[in-house]
Image 1 (cartoon, rainbow, N blue to C red):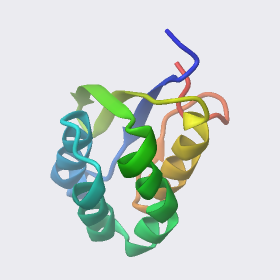
Image 2 (image 1 turned 90 degrees about the vertical axis):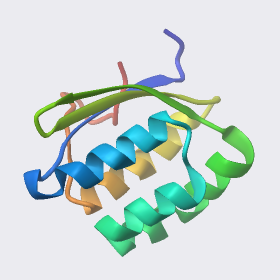
Image 3 (image 1 turned 90 degrees about the horizontal axis):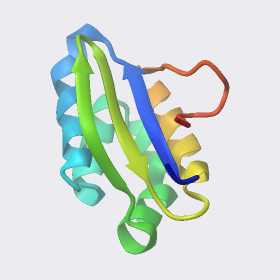
Length: 114
């Protein structure tokens, strides 16, 4: 596993589970840009403002890959891989996920390292 591979592991509110599943599965299907903007805005418009620059980078330059979606009840997990520095974007993404109501499952304070 390279230094630029991470796991996204979150618990989401049961009432919004289907919305979250659609969001994470869409990421794993390669849908970033407008798709991710719409999903974040529906969950919490403030999260979209937070992710604005990151989304621009993801769509225009870094093109991260999300893959291996897993679901166990309201716990969702996938993997992410991106270029050098990708962890900084993921920290902003973690903040956006929390704003949207997700709980990030990590034992340390880093977002999602495997």
